[in-house]
Length: 115
Image 1 (tube, rainbow, N blue to C red):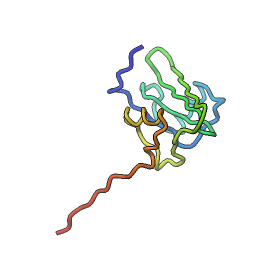
Image 2: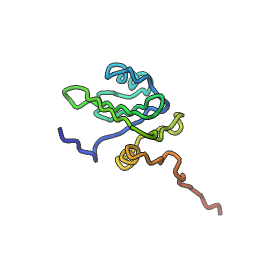
Image 3: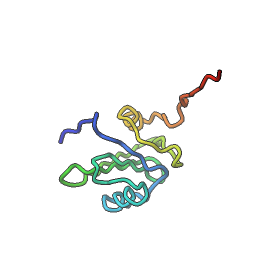
Image 4: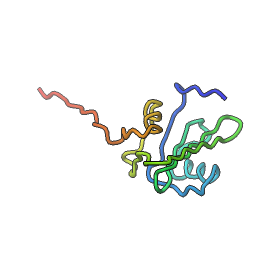
């Protein structure tokens, strides 16, 4: 299977989920909790309660794929609230897997000039 990373959309589910859930339970969370189309081909990422494990599900046109990553030390940076959740870029996805906490990075400021 070849993944075109320029076309993949990546979404995270803030907070944690019960990691006993497998594909059916996680896809149900995507549809009901995130209000998104689980068959879109997008990646959906979930964190365990202690944030040492991630699960990723996606639809690849013939069936669901489920990936899991477990850290032996440390924890993944992870947003707790919906305000912090958003679509990730591929660069942010790689940073997440490397443990870089871009969620708390400096936010871009926007100013307007009043005349």
